[in-house]
Image 1 (tube, rainbow, N blue to C red):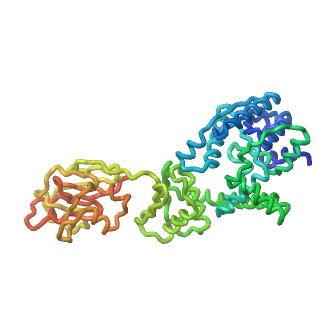
Image 2: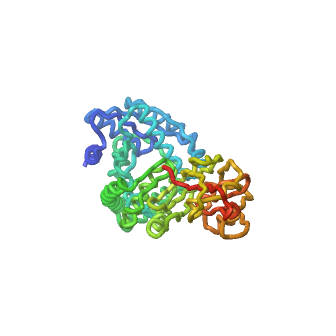
Image 3: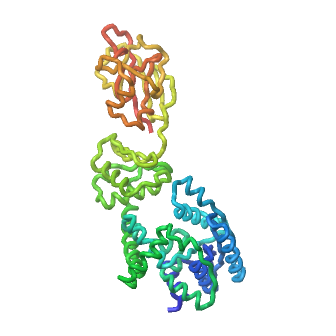
Length: 458
């Protein structure tokens, strides 16, 4: 079948375009993007398309980039297509974000496409990915140990990104260009074996063709099957997420625990992956980390937590699972209202205090505490821990460093700076949520009792 008809069929099958669309074409000057531009230009009349082209200069090959930009400018001028250039700093981005050069280039390239499309008010961004690129992508994800989502490869349509050549092989692109005498340029970096994709393209794919001459079609067909199955699973996951998310920010997500505890593992894993992907601050978590979170959901106890890369924490609460990368907010200093209520906003709690002359009943020393008011040095203060802090834990009968107490009580490190400490003068009288100090407990001669209780606020 004629190349133009095949690409037109691909566009229609995947609903890539609507009549009258403005389309921004990613143009590098290489065979694939040049072929794409010419094909869309041939289809322009039938679809009533308004074409634009963009070259992204990655700042990696100054001399070659200069020639490529000149070539692309001449090509688009000859076709009557507006052309623009955007420059990005790939090396700097890679260093700042800890990425490989290829990953950094891909991120910045798509960012440049989106920014230019927004500026040009383009409905679609067309890239020159071919069936060979799809096959290589599947192999890359296979080598990385990806699941169905990764092995489904590139989507023909993702947002406003479209890939009209995704069902066309590279050899067909070359035949199309050669038969029409269409010139193009070669990016010499694609010939280097420094990058995994290049090694796959030049070493592994020729070897696989010896075992299966139709390896590209096979891998692309596998990707399509897995993509359809993955889309079905994702619809199930979307419904599950709608009843799971309690709260979400850029840095974390809070999920209801109860529905997850009985969820099939394959769905639970996908739910957690989706929840993590939806939060900007949780990027970088891999399969192993998701499995650790699954274990926390299945077998963790209330208050248990795991520490993951990048300062990410997963905490199992009484009714929720919180996954967050937000830095721990150290407690500020407060003066306690006695009697009255004092809200500790960083800790999300309120301390309620009252004065009574009645003998105190049993209190747990964790959420409630009682003290001999006449022995206290008012006003009482609240703060977080400091180096050298100590107190006399009730029932212990001796002094203990607060650091040692936290270690013995297995208080997580990221929680210790948020534990409120109530002070009389410089003495810690209550480690809120844990234990009171022995020195200030009421006795037989106590006249007035200070009673305090801590409550969670939302």
